[in-house]
Length: 68
Image (cartoon, rainbow, N blue to C red):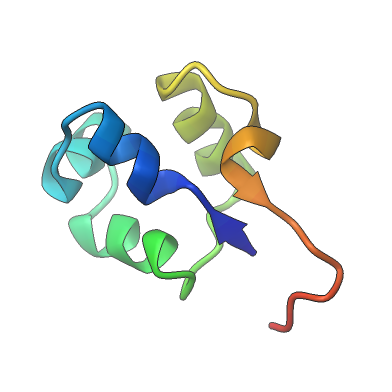
């Protein structure tokens, strides 16, 4: 699954560590999501969307062609 987390983080002038602290996750989690190595839980995806005041589908782009 692709995502726009890195772009949103940059638009809000946040470092990975800053965002991690605000979402109560590790910096490694933010890195893994940004590079596509980890898909967040539905709960975390909702928290990220709420933090940026966006819809989940505006941040996380699902494609049935995406391989796991």
